[in-house]
Image 1 (cartoon, one colour):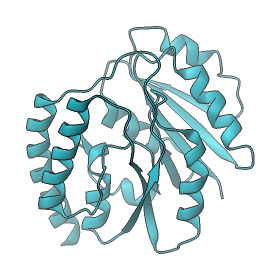
Image 2 (cartoon, rainbow, N blue to C red):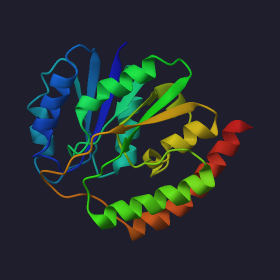
Image 3 (spheres, rainbow, N blue to C red):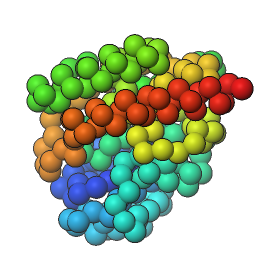
Length: 228
């Protein structure tokens, strides 16, 4: 079955070529659409992406202003032609070799609407790992999403269900909670996680933690509304 890979990109010019090559080699036996969303990068990311615009299965979207990861992902999903979505970061830390494993698990269980990756051995610094664990603990304590690593970008899920959720900035971190909240089954498996080779993480700790609390309240309201 065909699927669409949606990849938000912001200032990742040095990672794009390697990532595209890894996707191509990992998915030789699959039919897929590749959607790259350039989030108004200030480096040469958009120029690098456009070098591959003649690839038959590649769709390129460029935001006019920097809108953030959630908006870029949402925009890519809205424009996807397939109902099965594979979400992936552009920084190269997720391994495209794991995509077939997630896809096959998704396709082989008709009761599953979301398959998410768990970065079992994270290749990040201590502050990033501890902040993520704390955020996961608080979120799961309140929302009971049963996902130990909602921050892992590598996920496979149903487009139609995802687009039922009203957009908000930060939605990409609450996909497991939203699916679980409306009784759509999700499963989570360990995936490879790699060190970033180029560029810098766009990671915020304190600011994102404070916003996360407000987002939890928002997610609770969304789930309540959709259940009515």
